[in-house]
Image (cartoon, rainbow, N blue to C red; front, side, top):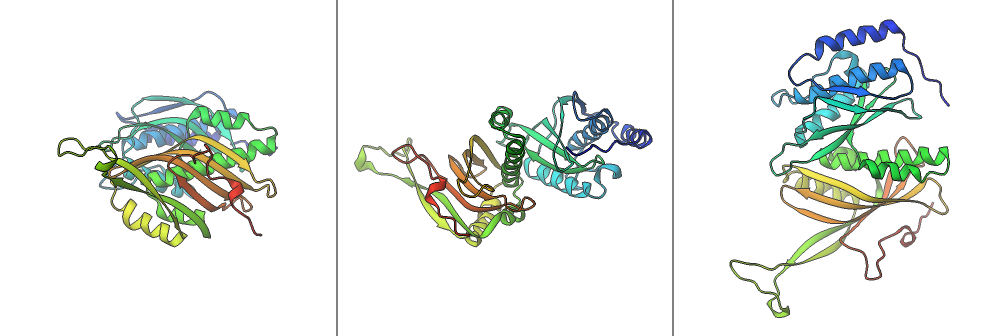
Length: 332
């Protein structure tokens, strides 16, 4: 196990002093961390997380970004500030609670996560409570923010780990699918494009509405009974990204993608290739549906996993099965 670098007391005190000055105001949010890898880093992250969550409530649309002090946003923290700003602009999140309690999780790459940071959206017709995750580096700088999968799903997945190595990879996969989910919420086409292999197979669905009086359905000016069907389409990465940018993201005020019923399978021959199945709820200002979404993800390069298959279907096949790993041949 990697040793945790102990922060010296004078650095901690100087950071806390700056935070005290910065965090004054009526929209303050206090983050209380009840556990973590060490007293000094927990105290630092508790103070910095309080500043970050308070900054959400001070977001000024005319500026277009959150304002964070230098010791949180400098270096890697600039990226974290930009990600958080994008998320606020697209979802209108705010923190309603004046106090949030959580724990610090130390990851193997010497970063720290704070989960259970609950926020609420205030976009029109899109009021919902969401769990935000804050990621910090060892210096306490904000490196990323994302929406979490449900806490019980997170715990259930990790409880299935049979070794520390498996626990590590399951955390990597959870992190990755949370990043994908959040990228759709913040309408980040550039990030999504980077996740797909140039040769990715993408299967999407298009809703078809039919009016068929001959099959027992009635259509009147006051009461329309609509029979819904979906057409499945195979697309290239370029086709999918073009529609995502020019139609879906452009024409929607907000997008909410939520994953549940998550199942993770490892390829029987390639240990770094995973098949992830989720039940997806998609809602936006123009369109809503539910269905089953599957990904084939190659973690051969952990710094940049690649999606080789993205397949959506509105419901299981007639035998109850879903699109699965066995339907695809991997040629290396």
